Length: 81
Image (tube, rainbow, N blue to C red; front, side, top):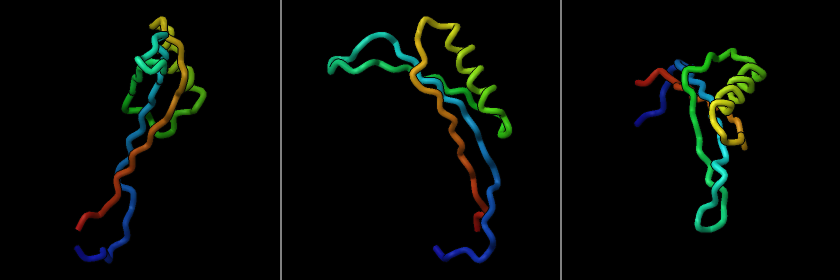
Protein backbone atom coordinates (compact mmCIF):
# COMPACT_ATOMS: atom_id res chain seq x y z
CA UNK A 1 0.00 0.00 0.00
CA UNK A 2 1.36 3.40 -0.95
CA UNK A 3 1.75 6.28 1.44
CA UNK A 4 -1.21 8.65 1.11
CA UNK A 5 -0.67 12.08 -0.43
CA UNK A 6 -3.83 13.71 0.88
CA UNK A 7 -4.04 15.32 4.32
CA UNK A 8 -5.41 13.02 7.02
CA UNK A 9 -8.06 14.39 9.38
CA UNK A 10 -10.19 13.13 12.19
CA UNK A 11 -13.48 12.13 10.56
CA UNK A 12 -15.35 10.72 13.54
CA UNK A 13 -15.07 10.58 17.29
CA UNK A 14 -16.85 8.27 19.74
CA UNK A 15 -16.73 8.98 23.48
CA UNK A 16 -17.66 6.42 26.14
CA UNK A 17 -17.73 6.29 29.93
CA UNK A 18 -16.56 3.12 31.68
CA UNK A 19 -17.48 2.56 35.31
CA UNK A 20 -15.60 -0.19 37.19
CA UNK A 21 -17.44 -1.64 40.18
CA UNK A 22 -16.11 -3.89 42.95
CA UNK A 23 -18.42 -6.89 43.35
CA UNK A 24 -17.22 -7.58 46.87
CA UNK A 25 -15.98 -11.04 45.93
CA UNK A 26 -12.54 -12.47 45.20
CA UNK A 27 -11.41 -14.79 42.43
CA UNK A 28 -9.47 -18.02 43.05
CA UNK A 29 -6.21 -16.01 43.27
CA UNK A 30 -7.58 -13.63 45.88
CA UNK A 31 -8.01 -10.70 43.48
CA UNK A 32 -11.18 -8.59 43.61
CA UNK A 33 -13.77 -9.35 40.93
CA UNK A 34 -14.54 -6.15 39.04
CA UNK A 35 -17.60 -5.55 36.85
CA UNK A 36 -17.47 -2.87 34.20
CA UNK A 37 -20.35 -0.91 32.72
CA UNK A 38 -19.78 1.10 29.56
CA UNK A 39 -22.02 3.94 28.48
CA UNK A 40 -21.57 4.92 24.83
CA UNK A 41 -22.76 7.97 22.95
CA UNK A 42 -21.35 10.52 25.39
CA UNK A 43 -21.22 14.07 24.00
CA UNK A 44 -17.70 15.19 23.14
CA UNK A 45 -18.06 18.37 25.18
CA UNK A 46 -19.47 16.73 28.33
CA UNK A 47 -17.91 18.16 31.50
CA UNK A 48 -15.87 15.80 33.65
CA UNK A 49 -17.99 16.75 36.67
CA UNK A 50 -21.15 15.70 34.81
CA UNK A 51 -19.62 12.35 33.82
CA UNK A 52 -18.52 11.82 37.43
CA UNK A 53 -22.09 12.51 38.58
CA UNK A 54 -23.47 10.06 36.00
CA UNK A 55 -21.09 7.36 37.24
CA UNK A 56 -22.18 7.81 40.85
CA UNK A 57 -25.84 7.94 39.86
CA UNK A 58 -25.37 4.63 38.02
CA UNK A 59 -23.56 3.11 41.02
CA UNK A 60 -26.38 4.22 43.32
CA UNK A 61 -28.61 1.74 41.49
CA UNK A 62 -26.38 -1.12 42.67
CA UNK A 63 -24.86 -2.27 45.95
CA UNK A 64 -21.35 -2.17 44.43
CA UNK A 65 -18.64 0.42 45.05
CA UNK A 66 -16.90 2.35 42.29
CA UNK A 67 -13.21 1.58 41.93
CA UNK A 68 -12.54 3.48 38.68
CA UNK A 69 -14.16 5.87 36.22
CA UNK A 70 -12.63 6.19 32.76
CA UNK A 71 -13.41 8.16 29.63
CA UNK A 72 -12.59 6.49 26.32
CA UNK A 73 -12.19 8.36 23.05
CA UNK A 74 -11.96 6.53 19.74
CA UNK A 75 -11.16 8.65 16.72
CA UNK A 76 -11.60 7.62 13.12
CA UNK A 77 -9.21 9.18 10.62
CA UNK A 78 -9.42 9.59 6.87
CA UNK A 79 -9.56 9.84 3.99
CA UNK A 80 -9.08 6.23 3.05
CA UNK A 81 -7.71 5.91 -0.49
